[in-house]
Length: 156
Image (cartoon, rainbow, N blue to C red; front, side, top):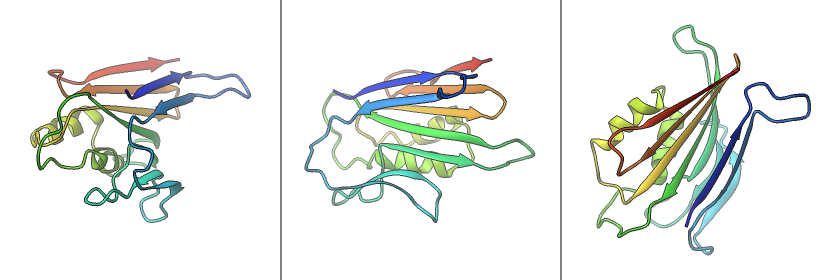
């Protein structure tokens, strides 16, 4: 079973953190993967799946997205968790859900609507956390079996 813990504090005291993420990945320990690193081309920090046929995907990643349309930067964390159940035959690798979101300029609910048009993924839960510099934290949670994403806003 995959487990995810997310703690957010929009206004941490000195020496404390705005975001703490703890997770495990219910996967085979021998599945080939690269350890977390910063990809200089994409500016994404995270480990990379090296499973044959799934190379390049990731289950947890971080990226700072720059100024877009006059809006300030935001730090984005994306996490993908397995859902128990049967795997779909000939399904797409779910690890690209995280990577593609981090590379996109889309808001998480819009991104989820876009990828759900495909429906060719085995079960998953997708969580995106956006931290802005103005003490706003937005968490989007989507489980494949839900009708629409849940968005939680945390303000100071």
